[in-house]
Length: 89
Image (cartoon, rainbow, N blue to C red):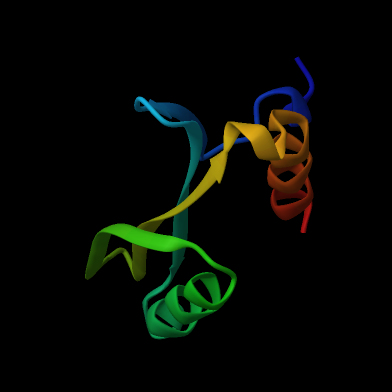
């Protein structure tokens, strides 16, 4: 199976309520400990919400989950294209 069919560290969840349906994309970001705050700030500036921070280094690496929520009306295809473009960078 090609790598782009199932990008690593990317998870999609549907969030439904009475008014709208939203999709959340969760990405586990692992980075060197000395770049942790910088990488976190970059994701915040790009519109992600940060969850599950793990700022204590393990083997020199820290991680966090970056979450992006999009209304279903914005187009699931657009969300998938964004996710694949970000993984490819």
